[in-house]
Image (cartoon, rainbow, N blue to C red; front, side, top):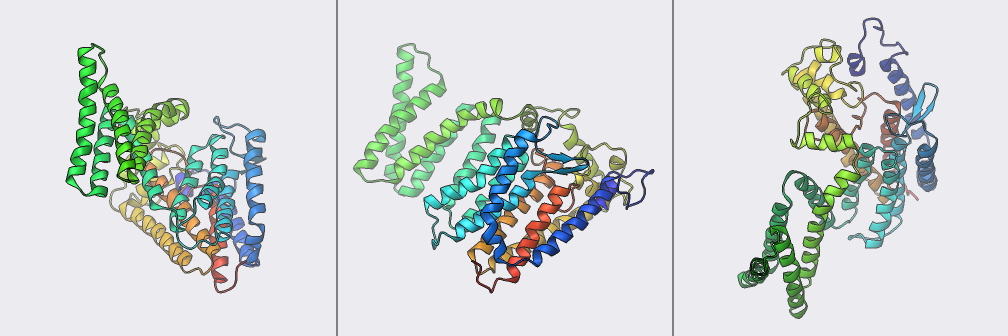
Length: 448
């Protein structure tokens, strides 16, 4: 219904007009339900037996699309056969979650995930993501990183999640503030963490004194020898010198966490300087633009910022109860590009208002909570891992898609589950859910 509203045309009023997107989506709904019914009749061990074969086929498809797919808008992401198009990156999500479930269920550890297991699981997860980045399709690749949340549920150290959060925070901080400010903030944070770990005021005072002495020494060296060192160079040199002293003291007094803390500090400083290289040489020009617009570094309401700007106008104009079905002016006059795919939520916001948007978000939240409940009640590790993998993927799609339509997140182009137009995504999400239903139906059986 919302795709019908998004692309409404007086010349094609029939909902069963299969020349239009809403008609094609009806066909995909029927196809998806047929696949779902077929999955429910499969033997439950079918999935575990063919898991790695399915994963290998998905990798082959991702490799094939790089060489044989037609380039559209600078990307090779689709196989096209007449009017039919298939996106391998969508189906690779199913294969990756199945492969992770199979591998983790075979390891047999009880609590903390071993490093070897974590590394292999990360390779299984990120290998298809790297192939998708090569297409390039950074938005679809981002979804695979959300599976780290599932690894956390399966025993991955929470420190890795904290480290990932620090990396993301540093990346954005390096884009919006001076490098010197970041280094000073990191040094202060390191001293704060040290004080929490050591819990001795005299040790904290001594560590600050060592750093202060190194800072003073380099400043005096620069001043009296007329070296004219920049503040950054003085502070960075002071960090290196004082770190050598800290390492010596940590070895002498057996403070094992100090070298780890110093490694994180120095790594964070180095990473903050690599952000400029990543931003300038790895991100595409339109991705750079979207980030700078999101962070308020620049404004481009008529260029790359146009989509988000028009989307926010559409959602905001809906008010509390909306303008009514098929009465959205932003929708009807095509002010928002990609309105039936990536920006489908702005149609909901304009025509159904705050209340309609709230209902949709509530339904999505209830679906995620229900999936969490189903995943947690599984007796086999395979089914539990698979269930949490679905939750991670769907949560990312929902949060990022809605977030980008209201200007909270950069536009990366991923569909809203069960709403956006697209046969590949609809079929993928349907298969993901129906496999979970099939596994849950056999939760009391022995899954090999």
